[in-house]
Image 1 (cartoon, rainbow, N blue to C red):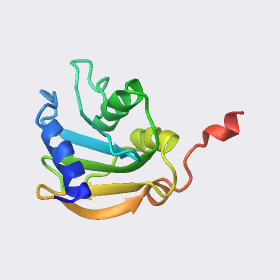
Image 2 (image 1 turned 90 degrees about the vertical axis):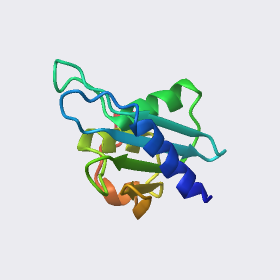
Image 3 (image 1 turned 180 degrees about the horizontal axis):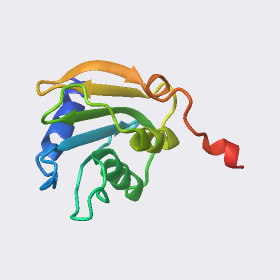
Image 4 (image 1 turned 180 degrees about the vertical axis):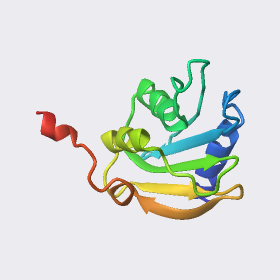
Length: 132
């Protein structure tokens, strides 16, 4: 099994744990750090819609609480949409912790179908260094 397949499998598996009683739109996301660790998360909704959180946000929370580390690649998968991309807010969240050359794998139900970089998906994102 390739490293990219393993990342897809982690995103796909965690998508099954999504809590989406309102939209019925489960999403899973997984990242791999440079030391090979994988962290995953699914989206969760609450009755005060849209106050839930995205799969990428959950994934980043798990990653950060475990100590973080350089992120090399990310995979995102949705049950009802092929090649789903992170929403605008999640693109910015991901950009906070990745590099412009970090790979973002877009998936269908069988695996990775397209790979882009964070710089391609958010070319003019808000940069934290501007706040210093």
